[in-house]
Image 1 (cartoon, rainbow, N blue to C red):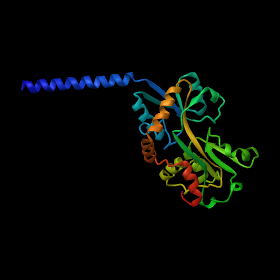
Image 2: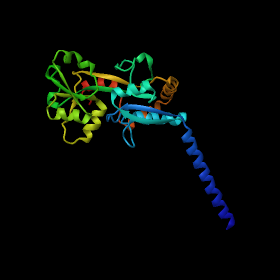
Image 3: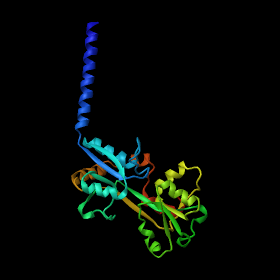
Image 4: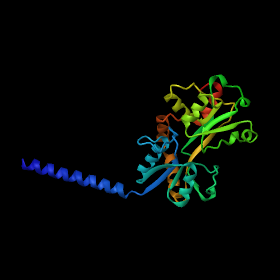
Amino acid sequence: MMKHSFFRKYAGSFSLLLSSALSFSSACAETYVVASQNIAYYPHYEFSAVKDRGYAWALLEAFAADQGIKFEYVSMPVLRLQIELEKGNVDFVYPDHPTWTNPVNDNATKHFSAPLTESLVGTFVKPERFGQGISSIRKVSIVLGFSPLYWQDRIDSGQTKLISVADNKSAIYMAQWDRADAFDMDYYVAQYLMQKLDDVDDFKLDPDLPVTVVEFCLSTVKNPQLLLELNEFIASNPGLVAMLKARYNIGNARYRLESIPAGLQ
């Protein structure tokens, strides 16, 4: 009886010691802050979510576990992202890209990772508008802060007007209620939202309207070495990347763009 009591006491002490050691290890892990736009862009990312924060979060968490580091995730307005990055209050910004411009900092001062994924961004219309051509699109709804450069010539000439809204759901509803002729959005974000919204039409991405493939990278000012390690992690783990993309229903953006004219939506 005493032997069993001793064993239970020892086992309990060992468990407590192990738990304390793990907690200490976690507390001592170097922590980096990753910031994103404060919009719901699931399945790509939604850093303000409580649990599942999207594909980019899942990939970064896998990388953090591999490196023995910790990421904290915050979301904020688009321009504030670069301001806080410059100040050093956040360590990384996602998504970002060497070709994107902003009034806060010069991309020459930043470092960029390899793409974590690609975004297929295009123009969605109701079925009855599909194939009618760009001249039929007078108003396009889009999330505030996004700049669709492929519409810029028509915007400058007054042929097309952008209607800026707070979030992607609002962009869809503006087109649903015919307050816009189309909405501009990532293909996978649109598919995710339209599966959840049972009061909207079956909008289609029209390949004859402005469409592009955009790379989503991670940027930093002060931590270029960690980006190199992230690049190596992504390159060395194609199976993990493929598994996470399948989990979040994010396909190959370039293949999807090529397949749409063939009727593969």
